[in-house]
Image (cartoon, rainbow, N blue to C red; front, side, top):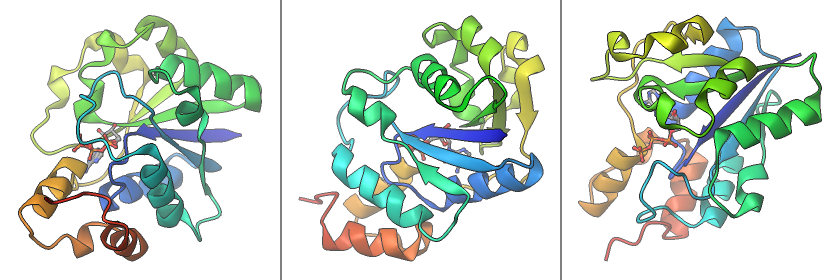
Length: 195
Ligand code: ATP
């Protein structure tokens, strides 16, 4: 089995995430993609992280109806900081050594790779499916990671969760940046208080 693992804050999940996931599935013939919302991402400040409950709900709404998309609360349950190495090891154990693990990641996030916990060991455990991101150049990547990377062939999608949160703060429209159900949930549940 070829598994995609898509870790992220998903604060909120948006169309950029879903397009990357679908392209990965198609281009690398993955059997399934597991979205793994992070509890306390070590690389992001804690402020502005919508509470885990809402982020989980929004991911569930976004992937509903796609039988090849699934969600895992493994990092949320851990409560402590989310380290990718621990998640990958847990998933490898769950799915067995014959399962190929592919970690889906944006180029921006991969640039910091060697600051991650046990980065070198992580390179042994999974492939990295890398999505282009506007403003980030491939030649900035550490050469030590290149043999484990596979590029997702796609145009950069210029949507980010921080851009969406910013637009909410400034009362700008966000409707078509996210799946419709996520948009409605976000508005109805006042996930991001604009006060
Ligand atoms: P924020 O703007 O708050 O930093 P984000 O939009 O990058 O959030 P995350 O949930 O942090 O969303 O992202 C999870 C993963 O998806 C990361 O590897 C990130 O690089 C990648 N990603 C998110 N949006 C895009 C995009 N539009 N293009 C490429 N990669 C993306």
